[in-house]
Length: 201
Image 1 (spheres, rainbow, N blue to C red):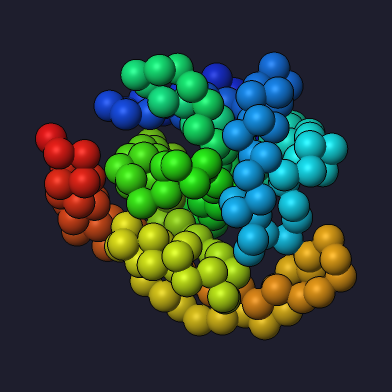
Image 2: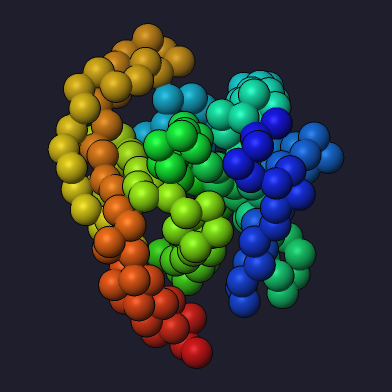
């Protein structure tokens, strides 16, 4: 269990709420994850229910070790599960972590949902945890994801070659991005405005 993040931490926005992952969420997540388009650039195929459940269980085990904190993304208006996201690579001694393993059903790609999820997570990281660096990464070839990361205000740092090994044994090069503490206020202002426009508030 992480000593940095309280076990019951829940993040609430206007459109979504991020709730700590529990085994009771697995069925709903498996249903959302069944669309193969979600997993085109991941190291695993989460449309395979058994593989997804293993990955979700791994997230809970890593939470117990204090290495990760997985969330389930709920749509507030309907209380439907939309996907999942995690805080990874938790390093409280260096006040840094990674936002990752974020996936949504394709119906919600390009909507205000991801913007609000990232605003909630980044605000929690910089304003509650006191992080000095938040890292994000994605497959080098996942242009949609790279554009989404840049849209929230993260700065591209470079490509880490052979960063991960996929389930099929091939290597994935990862594009790395980050936001650091001195940039946060500017990023927050710009991200909040983009969310306001996208959501039509």
